[in-house]
Image (cartoon, rainbow, N blue to C red; front, side):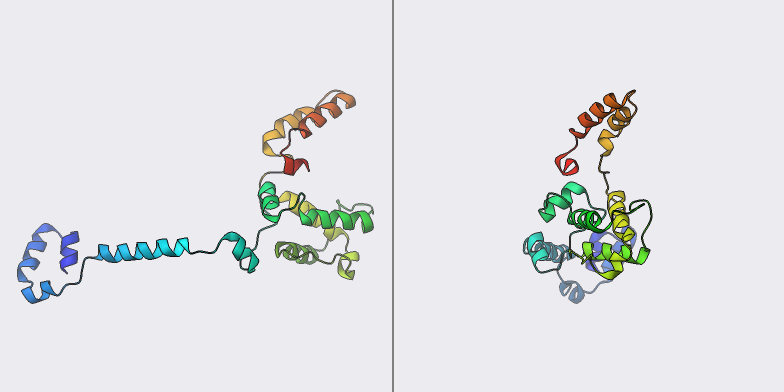
Length: 194
């Protein structure tokens, strides 16, 4: 009660009336102000934050998983230590071996197969693409590649270079177009260029 009166939750005229009627024995037994408890809580939280395991330790214990899909390309490669995302490497190797068919990137695979593959890559596993389920639905692998590129927060050819790519594609002759596109590709950030 004294704490509430000191903090000022009541109008001043009520504070006087209540304060006058509070017996001396009660006011002496009132606990210490809340601010000290807050101080202890803040100290505890600071100690807790300092003792938190690092991101690397959480990853080693399998508690923290790095996102693959929907993660910035540069950030993902920095965290994974790869030059090219594993999902693209695995999928393109599979497509070069098994997927040279009409419409590999045009036709869509079975949604459940695409989701299984996505889940495995997001769980930092490398799925066995030679399983019958994927060999019989090779389009799901092409669809997964497209899904990866579609979910990049900053597209492969980057928002920053969009106008330059647009201008390069609009060049008058094939030769001029090729030179301009080559010039813009050289301006891509290293993760996107690779």
